[in-house]
Image (cartoon, rainbow, N blue to C red):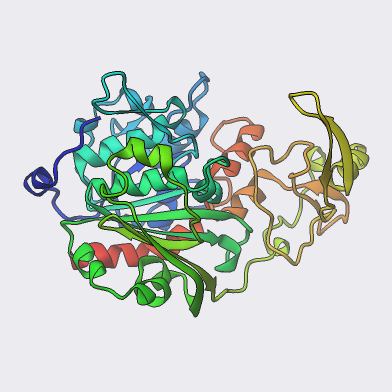
Length: 430
C-alpha cells in the first residue's frame, strides 16, 4: 500500500470540478435514486433528472452466480461498459473515470492492520479488504468529495477495542489529505418511513475551497449549523460529551500503531481534519415521520403474504422470552429477549429492515391488513417504500425473496435526496 505524498497530491490533482459521480457497492442504485430524484413512470421507465452524472458504477456479489442487484441496476439505468459487475479488488483503479464525488454503502468489517515480515508497510486484514479498496481509489483518483454510508455500530467496533476501526478510517483519510465529517442519522427523525440508524461520512479534499473554509470554522458552529450534516439535518444548539483527540504521527507513527493501540469513544456526530478528531453527542430537531399506515398497499389479495398458519410461531418469536443456552466453552447461560409489538403499530414508522425480511423471523414486519384486517407480511412494494424507492423498483425478474434481501441491504434514499441540493451547491461553489 503506497500513499502518494502530500507534495505529489498537489501536483497530481487534476480532476475537473463537475457533477460526475462514481458509485461503489452500488446495490440496486440507492445513491443514484436519491441524488437524481429517480422515479418510475406508468410504463416502468426510469425518469432521472440527471442533476449528477454517474460516470461509473460497480456492483459485485461474491460467492454467487446470480448477480440480481447488478441486473436490477442495469435494468433501471441501462446496459453500459461503465456499469461494472466485477470484484472491485480485481479492477485497475487508475482506469476508473475521474469524478468529483465518490459514493458507496460499504460493508462493516474488520479493519485491522498488521506489520509485514519486512516491517516496511502495513498489510490489511482479510475481512477489511473492501475499505482498503476505497482507500486505493481515493489514493489514485483523489476525488474532491466523498459520501459513504455504513451501519452505526462502525464507531464502536470491534468490541474488544472500541472505536479502533473508525479511528483507522479517519487516520487513513486524513493521511490522504481529506477532512471528514460524520453523523449517525435515524431516518425516521427526519421525516422518513423507517427507524433506520446509519452512519454517513462526508469527505472533502484539502485542495477544495470547501476544505479551506471548513478548517476556519468554529467547532461549535460545525456541530450545530455550519457543518455539512447540520446544514441539512438540523440539530439543537446545545450538545454534550464534546471531546477531541490528536491522531497525528506524534502519537501514532503509522496505521499499524493505530490498529494496535487506538481506542476512543466516538459520539453520534463529529469531524476529523489535519489529524485532529472532534466529537460530541448532538440532539436532533426532528420532523414528523411517515407512519406504516401510509406505506401499506390498499388491496393485498395475494394469500401468500398472509400468516394464519404461522401466527403461533410469530407470537413466540416476537414475545418476551428467556432461553437457556450453552457457550462455546460449555458454560450455560440465559439469553433474554424483550417483547416486540405484534402486529406492528401502524401509527409508527417501520422498524429497521433486515435482509431476512419476509421470512418467519423475529425482525420481520407483520401488519394488520388495512382492507381485510387479517395479519400478513409486508409486500416487496411496501419494503421498497420503507426505503423510499419507487414502487416495483426491484421487480426486474429477481426472486421475491431477493427483493426483500435487496431492501434489507439498501439505504433510505430520502436522506440522500435531502443531501443532494447541498452537495450540488458545494460543487458549484468550487
